[in-house]
Image (tube, rainbow, N blue to C red; front, side, top):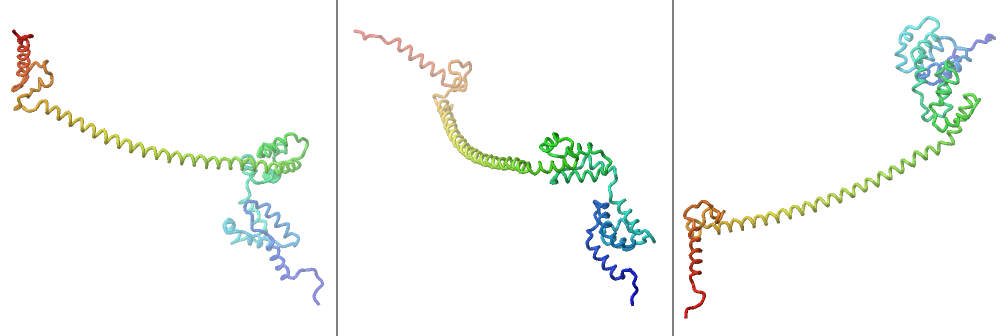
Length: 295
């Protein structure tokens, strides 16, 4: 008969280890300490040995994490494998206290979280190193003004109670905040559409005006061109007809043609003097004629 001892058969232990390992998530590089707390809560009731826990952790690491502990994988210590692996992973991925405080002071945001969720995250980073009243001020700084106004009149309450109140206020005011954001956005979109339509109309009108003005300028230019050409031709014809040629009996030199009786010089064969003498002669003859017939 088999012995009456309480030892568990080896194949049953292996099956239990596989089943428990499947319940564990992949290693959390952003929160390694929480991952180990969860892992130990699942495995410790089974009273697994050092090697079994070491193997389960190795199986939950991704490629980058394995690369960080190559020496512990290739040449693990003869004893305390699990503790050595745990300490190495925590030292690599867990943020230092300085870094956690820096994140707590400058990098925390409410975002889509509830106020209570933000408070829990800030408590985790503070780890009891920051007094509650200081943590409260830091936490309220990241809350919307409406929630801060409500919490300002609430006295003698713990941080957890304040977080519950903040969650309630946020749930009540969130629809109003969404409406305030949506309404201006919709109004802005409609206004932008109207402005764009008006700009398009103005552009069309300006284009039409430019076309009409271009036609008018072109027509006026052609008309002025024809008028100027006619005037120029008329003056040229008149000038030529007045001056004629030197062979003409009525030809005037350039001086008399331009200055007439004020001319001080004369070029031959100019007919000016001849015309003047003829006028004088006709005048004299006119005076010689009797006014009345002689009986």
